Length: 150
Image (tube, rainbow, N blue to C red; front, side):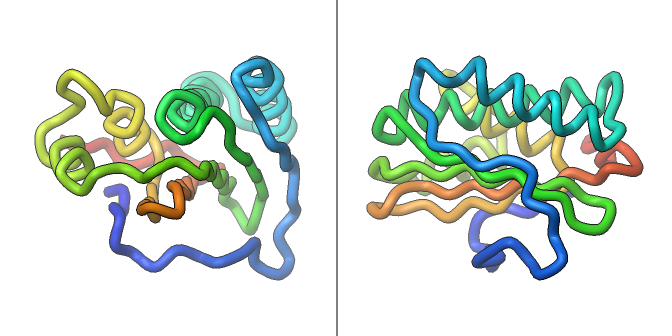
């Protein structure tokens, strides 16, 4: 089951990790970001649903950074052991606690579809959000699909 906000976020890429991709992005770079994530995931052997879901999760969160997080963001992707990690950060005003609670407890509603979806297709989702911006960290296992949620 995915982890929610309030969990301690790793502060940096761990030693021994292989950084695959880093970039700053805006609206005009979203296609490039999707292509780069797809290329790196495929090179690591992700196929079919696992590949599609990872690209979808990153697309949703980078789009959220554009629309709700100040119009731009940073993406970092790394591989460590048998897991792929993605970090999406922006400098917006943060996600209100009630919105995070609503997404976690009842589904996407009118807004929050990207976060809701990401929580269902990634093994872990850590969110650090506030007036400083939002940082979302995804853990995606390379060997098997995340456990299904009911």
